Length: 356
Image (cartoon, rainbow, N blue to C red; front, side):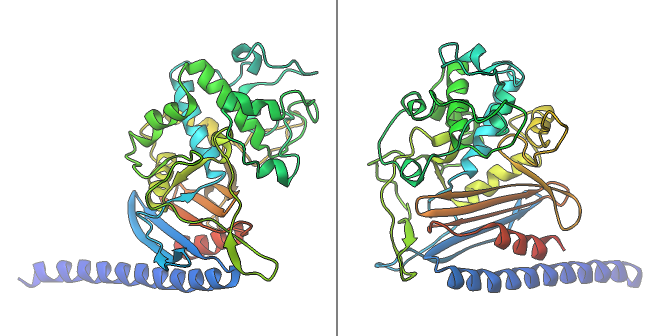
C-alpha cells in the first residue's frame, strides 16, 4: 500500500503546484487588466487565453453599454476585431493556395486583368505582405468613411493611385492592400468573399459568434462602440461602413471565438503546414531585409525567444490584439470597445505573465 501511496501523493502534489501556479498567473493578469481598463478609460473589454487548445482564463471587464451597465461576457459579447480580420483573411488565402485556386507568386493581374496598370507588376504574396507599394488610408475621413460599398466598389478609392514605390523595395502597412487581396480571392474562387470566409473558417471552426459587419443590421450581443472625447470621457463613436474593407478590418467576433481561431495557427486543421508556413514566415525585401510581417501576421520572438505571431487592430470604437505562441501552445486575445488604445504593451504584459 505504501508503494502505491507514494507515487499517487507525488502526482497529487505536482498537480496542486501546477494549479496554484496557474491561479497565481490568472490573479496577476486580472490585476493588470483592471488597471489597464481604468488607465485607458475603456468601457468594456474581453480577454481569453488558451493553452494546448483549452481555455485557461476567459473574463469580461466593464460594460458593453454604459447606460444599462450590461457586463461584458467573453463568450457572448461581440466586438469589432478590426485588423485581426487580416489574419482571418490570410488563413482563408492559405486554404485557396492549398486548393490550387490562388498562387502566391503570380501577378495580381493574372486574377484581375482589368485592374488599372501600374508602373510595376506585383504579386499576391507582396500584396498580403504589405510590400506591394499600395498606400494606406489617405486620412481619417477615408478611414472612418460611412458609405456602404461592396469590395469591388471600394477599390475605386485607391485603384487609380500610383504605387508608392517599386514592389519589394519597401514595407508599408496597408489596409487597402487587403481590400485588393480580397477582390483577388473572391474573383479566383468565384465565391463572394464573406461567403468564402464563413464556409472556410467560421463554420468548420464553429465560430458561431463571428461574421462580417453589415451596416444597419442588428446583431445580438453587439457592444456599443466608443471613443474618448476632449476631456477623456468615453462617448459613442460615429458610425462607419466596413463592408468594402471586411478583409482588412470588417469582421465581428468574441474573444473566445478568436482564441479558437488562433489555435488554427498552432495546430492547423483547415490548412496545410506548408501553407501556414508561408503565412508565418517574415517576408524579405529585395535587399534581403526581413520585414517582420508574413501574410496577415506580424512575426516576432517571445520573451522565451520562441516564435510569436500577432496582430493588433484599431477600428472605430475598437482596439484589439491577438497573440499566438506555437511552442508554448498559448493563444491570447484581447478585444475592447474603445478606439485609440495602444494594445502592444498590454499584450506584452500578458505574455510575460503566461509564458514565464
